[in-house]
Image 1 (tube, helix red, strand yellow):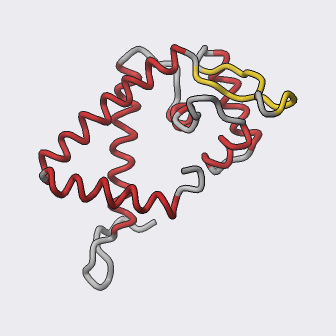
Image 2: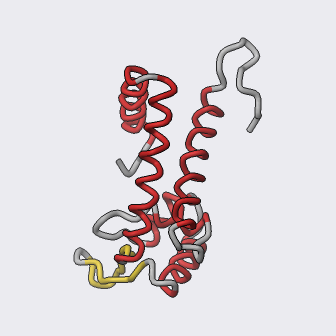
Image 3: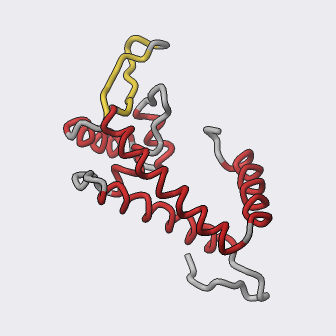
Length: 151
């Protein structure tokens, strides 16, 4: 991935700019979690936890969302389970399968991350204005329809 903020024709490198913004939000959320006492979690573990649905998610789905192997995702889940952030529960739709669910400890640090993201977005709104921020939100929601297979 190039690091230039504009393309050869002078237009903004939107892909890079979106990546930089997302990386900034992720870093702020992670730093807030660590500052809040969850200093035993890695960025990779935090990314995986962010992919867990409220009712739980299968490891194979987590692996697909994280674009990693099932074995790598299972390894991270094992670590998170030992640390008390996730639990394995029976999948009510398939008794042979397990769902990975967040524990109350994980939900508490998720709240810290969400609060920091909200602060960051508020700062962005202060910088670009409320009209542009609403337009960005609407645009990102529209793009999710065609970019997020789990939406």
